[in-house]
Image (cartoon, rainbow, N blue to C red):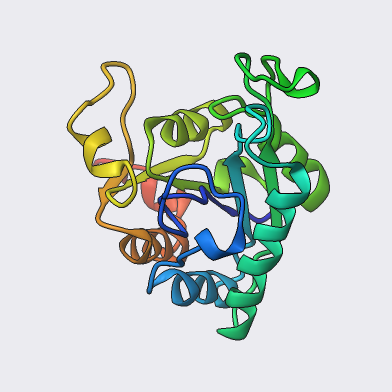
Length: 203
């Protein structure tokens, strides 16, 4: 099975302005479309995985989240790129909307969103990458056996200054453009030849 690139949304693909529930709040980073298009050309599915607790907090509805995603899709498509799927968690244990006020496995760093993507898209998490601006994105990568990259956009620069004792990123980079270069270098690297790992017999 092929791997995928799992991308956080706010602070990674678009500017993080708090709880984004309207399309006029969406500002796409200048490198976002080019990065997604590069993944498309490399044959890596692009999957957005995002916590959207604004639904549980009563700030906006799931319909608003989906409208934002349709808007983001239209921007990406206008640039000749493609997002293959979106998965979001609307829950939060301290939410004010009863239907969404609960703990769940789909809220990052829980792996529920990824498990759904694996079922739907048939991707291999061991060959995949997770990119985000928070340590929870790196923790998600560890939970699924993928490589995790922290970007310094959004909350990333602050997160970098607060390292987690039991958690490390495979790379910490300036933005999604830099993460894309890192991932594509790994993706295109030739697999090691098993025969080359066998020591030559001594004479």
